[in-house]
Image 1: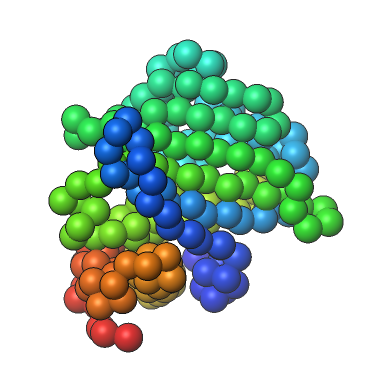
Image 2: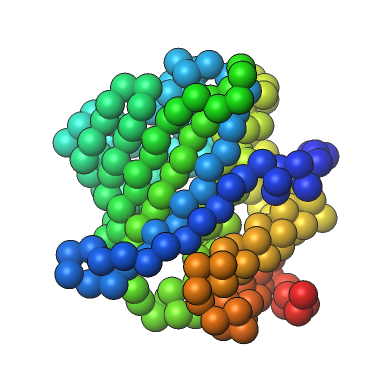
Length: 213
C-alpha cells in the first residue's frame, strides 16, 4: 500500500492537557481530523458494527447507549452516551485499567466532516514512560484506517503486521510519535522528558530504536 505519509501526518491536529478526574491527576490526549464524506456516512462508519472491522478491529456487543462492547484482542467497555451524528462517549477498559473516550462530530471544511477524539486516562507509570504517544499513535493509526475506508469503502483492511513492517508504516508511526512528543512540550512538560518518552513510544510501535531529533 502506497500513500502520502506527510499528508496523513499533517491531516491530524493533536493536543494534550492535564486535568482532574475522579479526584486524581489525569491526562487527555485529543486528535482531530477532517474526512471528505457526509455526516451520515462518517457516523455510520464509526457506529455500525458491520463497518467498524473494515477500518479498525472486529467488535461484538450491544452498540447502544448503556450497552457493552468488546474489541477483539483489545479494550471493552460501556457506551455511556450517544447523540446521533454529534457525540459518542464510552469507557475504555483494558488490562484492569479504565479510561474514557469521547468522540465528537462537527462540520469541517466545505464537503468535509470533522471527528475529534479525546482519550482521558489517570496518571500512571505507563504515562511516565511513554507519554501521550502510546494512546495518540494508536488512535492516529485508527483514524488513518478510517480515512482509507471512507476513500474506498470496498477495499479490504490492510494487513496490520505487513503495514507495521513496511517503510510507509514505520514512517507514519515514527512521524506520529515525534509529533506527540512535541504536544506535551507545548503544554508545559519538560521538553527533554517529552522527547525521551516519544523515543520509547517510537521503539514500541516500530520495533526499532528511535533516533534523536
